[in-house]
Image (cartoon, rainbow, N blue to C red):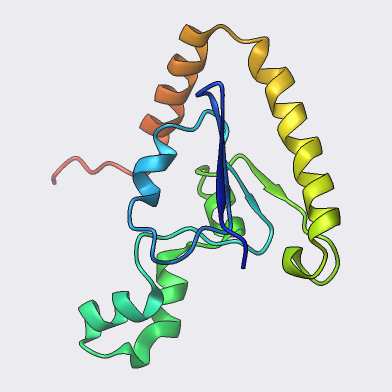
Length: 141
């Protein structure tokens, strides 16, 4: 399993196959202008087993917890948290690291070019608007 975080000019951050032990993933997303994940990556502050142990006092419900956590790249894209899902080579990234590196390089170069065209103030404003829209708010009724 690969694990890496790229920071480019403090504006672009790529989360790639974050290990489940990383407990501050949600905080990292606050620093990202355009977050993206690999196709088969997941991003969570807790493992399904840990979540099940807290909610049901048993890790036997890990599959149910995994579904509820919605932590796959597809889930996070549908929720508007991740802006792009990077396709992995056939057989997944770990089976073809050279091809995955090529795909990732193309993606990073594309993002850098797009980011350089946007003033820093606008990037921060866009990021703020993006994260303010995530989730739902209740009136308290």
